[in-house]
Length: 159
Figure 1: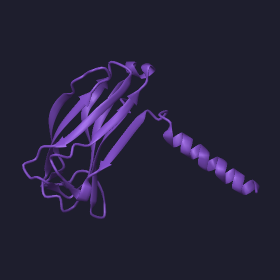
Figure 2: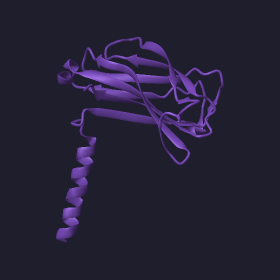
Figure 3: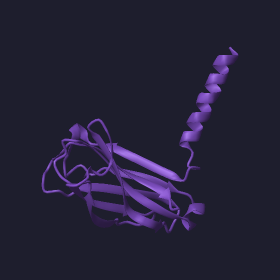
Figure 4: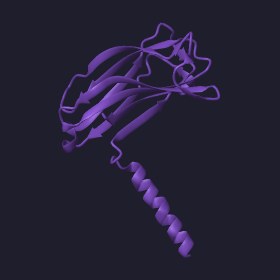
C-alpha cells in the first residue's frame, strides 16, 4: 500500500514538474500528415507569456524532423507570429541549411531520422504578456515536400 502511494506521488510530482515553465523553455512540435508537407498545411503553435517574462530576452528556434530520404540540403520556411492584441501577423522568410556536401546532415540523428533546432530569432524581446501564435509554412518548389516528419517552435530564455 505504501509503495503504491509513493509511486503515485512520484509520478504526480514528475507530471507537475514537466508542465511547469520554470525551466524557461517552451517547445511544441506538430506532426506532418503522411510525412508529406503540403504547402496548404500551415502548422500553428501557441505560446503563453506571463507579464513578468516580458523583460527577458528569448531565443526562438525552428524545430524540424525529417528522414534520411529528405531530398534537399535546405528548406525555405515562411514564419509568422501574431502577438496578443494584434489583428495581423508579422512574417519573415528563412532559408535554413539542413546539410552540406562536406558534413552531411547538420542536425542530430538516430537511425534515419534527423532533428534540427535552428536559431531563427536570437535575443528576441516580447512586448506584451499573453498568447503568441506562430504559424509555419513550407515554401519550397516541391509540393508536397516529402519525408518531413514534424515541425515546431522552441522558445527559450537567452543566455
